[in-house]
Length: 102
Image (cartoon, rainbow, N blue to C red):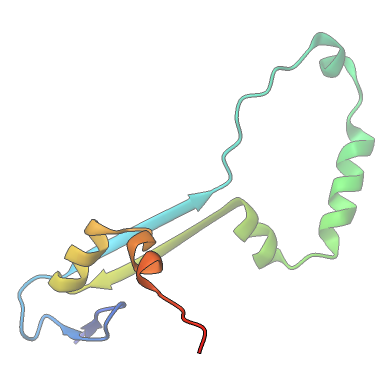
């Protein structure tokens, strides 16, 4: 049997409540369309591509992938679902933090 817990508060799901919520987040690099000129199309970009591949060879594949595309999936209880919908980027939570110099 699969057991679910709320990824925000840790409460077991589907024991006290009949519903759980799934949040899927997709993060990807947004590339705006480029304006390509005829001269750029005529250029040989083989050297540029070789340099880029050489730079990438020393990098961690997971890090490279994270720079382009990443997905997250979270299970939430009804209370955390309401909190998430009210403030999905946790901006209000950040504003409530109040540090005082003691």
